[in-house]
Image 1: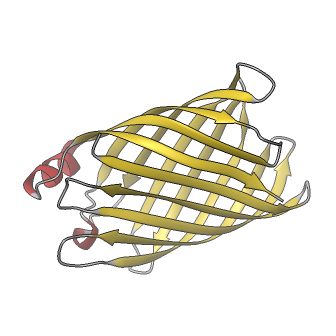
Image 2: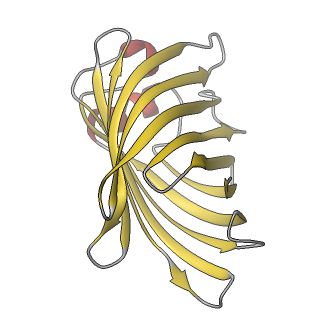
Length: 196
C-alpha cells in the first residue's frame, strides 16, 4: 500500500433543503505526483421522493514535486436512491477556465448488523477537454472500485475503513506513466459520515 485516501461527507438542514460539505483526497507516499485534495460546498433541494438536486462550488488542489496548482469549479449534480437501493451521485463540473468534467459514484449499503455496514463502491471521472496543468486527458480518466466497512456509532456519526483499487485509463494512463506515477493503485480509505 503506497497511498492514503480520505472521504468526508456532512450535511445540515431538513428533509427538503440541506447544505452539504464534501471533502476527499489522497496522499501518495511513493509517487512523484504527491496527491490531491478536493472540497465541495453544495446546496441541495429535494426534487423527487428519492433525489436531491445539488448546486455549489468545488476547489481542487494538487500536491506535486514542483508546484501546487489549484482550480475552482461550479457544480451541478444529483444525489439519491436509484432502483435496487443503489445510492448514485452524478455530478458535472465547470472550471474557472471553462473546462467541463464529471464524476459518477454508485454505492450499495449491505447491513451486516444494525450498526455495521459493508459498502461496495464504484467511482469514475471523465473530462470533455484536456487540462494539461492538472494532468487530465479527454475521455474517461479512471475507474475506482472499493469496499468500505462502516460502523454507525450513532445515526449521525459513522467512521469507516476500507480499501479501493483505482485504474487509470486511455490517454490518462499514458500520461501518468510518463510522469512517473502508477496507472493502478491499491489504497486504504479512512473517513467519516456525519450530519447535523
